[in-house]
Image (cartoon, rainbow, N blue to C red):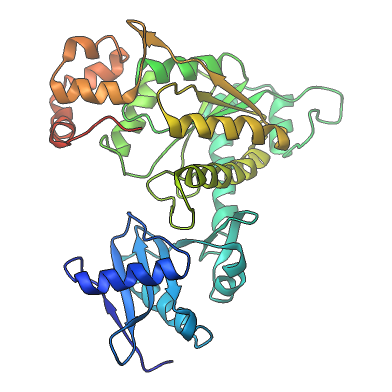
Length: 377
C-alpha cells in the first residue's frame, strides 16, 4: 500500500472537484452527472493523483494519473470505494469499464456480465449474480399463471430451454415475446402496447423497471401496470432488477457525445436482453414508437438493427393517440402537476385514474408538483 492519503471530496470543495475533473479529462473520462460519493488521492503537494466515485451500488469515474500508473493506486481506490459501499449496506456492486481494463477489475474480484466490443464492459462482484438472475426469471416463469395455461407440449419446450424453433418432434414451440417499460405512470398508451403484444403471442414477459429513479415510485408503477393489464391472461411479470439497465444508472463518462452515449447504452442493454432472451426462449421484443424523443428514436433504430442478428424480432408499435396527439407519460405528469384531471381522464386507464384520485396518491402528486420540469426527453 502507498503512503498517499485518500479522502472524501465534498461538493463545497471547489478546488479538489476541479482537480478531479481535470484528472478525469486527462485520462479520457468525463465526470458523470450521477455521483453520490467521490474520493481523491493526493500527493505531497496536494495534487490529485487518483480518484473514484460511487452512484447507488455502482463504482464509476475511476482514474489514476498517467505519471503514477503501475503503483497499485487503482487497487487502493477500488478497495476504498468498496468499503464505502459495504458500510452503506450495498454488498452487490457493479461497474462499467473500458474493454482494456476488464482484466484488471477481474483480478480485483469483478466478473463480466456483458460487453460491447471496443466500447464498454459491464461487471459485478458476484460470480453467479447474473446467472442467478436468469434462474430467478425462469422460476418466476414456471410459477406464473400464464405458464400454467400453456399446453404440456409448450411447457416441455420452455423447461427444456429449447433454442431451436421446435421441440424435436416437429411441433412448433410457443410464441414468446417481451416488453420492458418504466410506466411513469401507466397510461392508455402503455396499455395499448401491452394489449398489442399480448394478442400476438402465447406468453408475454413484461419487465417493469424496478429502479426507484422516477417521480412515480416503483411500488406504485408496478401496481398500476398489473392492475391495468389484469384482463390479459398470458402475461408473466418481472422486476427488471439491476441488469436491465436504466438511463439513471448508465454511465455516460466513457462516451464523447450524446449520440455515442445513447448508442453505447442501447448496445449494452441489448447484450443483456439477448442473454435473457436465450434463457426464456424470447423471440420478439415489442417497443413503443416515440416520435418526440431523440433518445428513444435512436434506441429503437439500434434495436431494430441489432435484435434480428440474435434471431429476435423487433416490433415498433405506433403510439396510441388522444385528441390527435401521441399519449405519453410526460403529458400525464404535466396534467398531474397542473391539476388538470379532465385531460388526465383521456390519457390513463380507469385503474390509474382511480389511484390518482385517491388519498394514497397525495404524496406522489405533491412530489410531481414540486418538480420544475416533468417533461422528460
